[in-house]
Image 1 (cartoon, rainbow, N blue to C red):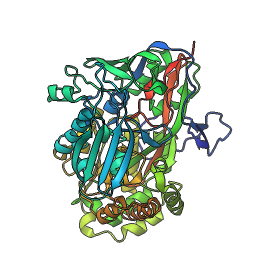
Image 2 (tube, helix red, strand yellow; image 1 turned 30 degrees about the vertical axis):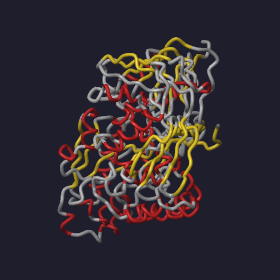
Image 3 (spheres, one colour; image 1 turned 90 degrees about the vertical axis):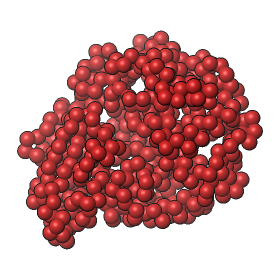
Image 4 (tube, one colour; image 1 turned 60 degrees about the vertical axis):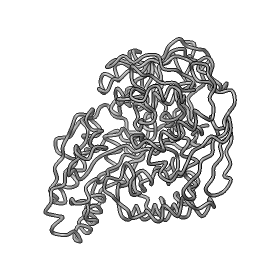
Length: 550
């Protein structure tokens, strides 16, 4: 499915940290030079279908080597990009952001507290054994009962998961929740063979322990520090997603120059999220194709310290108003996207699309800094908060460092005490999830994506008490969110969702509207078929890839 929407793209020859602390105007930006053939791009959901099979495809994991392939503990680009081709879920989120049956061929909401799942016949694990209700129940109960599972919080409202037939599982809820069912299209609904899960309590998803799932590719090997290799599972049940590639090799380059060189020389066949600094070179290359698709992604700032300066709403509003979001979108992130009016990305509006689109129109922004409005907002800040130093930490990557420099420039212009810290990219995840590492940091960066394309899921992670991306402890929407997920009527639930989004926008907590991003995918001319839409975290995207005959 091709969208008619066109985005404007900054033609960047390179990205560098600006010593002045501000973002320079891009001379070839599309607003100034719309005749540049490389200044616009069309969004498409899928790239052209392949015409042949291929023996092997090498694909780079831009975030680097994952620390685990255990799907119960997978919650980031690296593990999910690989796992999505191996371990399937009960429901599936498609490249056009729809949710449909998968390993569960159907489901019924018997009453507000009861969901019954009829499992698909003929599904086998890689060892040839059939998938049964015992496997599904064991996988779901693992997340329900095991606090170490990253999916555990999604089961907070689940009372029990039981086998109610050879191919039937029943979920009992503590209270009505019309979000939980759709979340089974994420790893909340992942299925791992029960026997294998029990045999590998400590090394599931490691190089030594491996996996046993039902997906189109199976785990082959993991050479630490080098690569992870998957091979085609010929007994895969879904004819529509039978792989056209015999072997899939994942590499772990993280340096922008090294990635770009490997793509242009053909050392690597493809990657998602190629370096923003290389956008112009890749678009002008004859070696491969750079395609763009819609994505539920927002580059955003979030506040993990409820006792710091950013706890003052006046300071949050002033800084937000004075950040050059438009310049950051163009200079740091290659113009792939633009300033976001809301915390939630448009691709995640889901069934509330009409209501949230209208709300986004109310808060429509050019993303340009407004110093006058920022100074006016700052007048309401407390002297105590203004005396505190604001600390921001970003990973040591070109685009994120430039983001940090831009935020610091906005703060300095307002006379705020601001300290920017840059840490190695491999250490940055600890700041997001480890309170000890994070300490009293006031501002962190993330490119956020939800489990499923649903704003209520986005809110559960970022803004409801206990959410994994709510270290601030914000509780301003708890009651509203609980009412929304308990509301069966889809239109009423959408209206409640818009009310919550409005409050989040006004509070600017726990994160701010930043930059919505489109997805980018590079494929060497020898291959094609990868989804251009951002759907590589839970969907078997590599099953679409095959050869072009070149």
